[in-house]
Image (cartoon, rainbow, N blue to C red; front, side, top):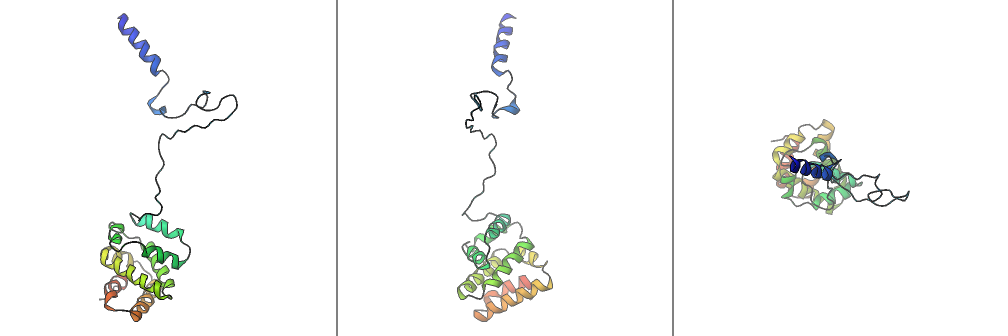
Length: 180
């Protein structure tokens, strides 16, 4: 009994006042951990790291793509950034779903950027990559387009088809406008 009580008193002295929930949280009342004599000292405690935001890498999903698109203000910048994404990556980005608003944001930027020939080539490559890589997601997101948005897509596709090979955009036309 004496050994048990000695062992318990030693064990309690070690963990006294330390809850599992408080582990890793600084105690600013102690001078060695926080404030000492009214002077501030730095405390580097991070019990739960915040979410990591990757910059400069390829987006993993539509949410990351939308967030990155918002960082670019001008339509030409958006299209140039979209063109940096490899064609096969679009199928991974939109493997789960494609947001209809994100699709319209992309199409508005593409429509505004096609006045320059180099941007028109990039828009063509992006549209072909999205149509080939994720046809179901593209068709579903495009089904929510209003008549005004469909007119914009028709103008975009007509301009691109006049400048290049029409057959290359046939799948994109079918998915975006529901034409057969």
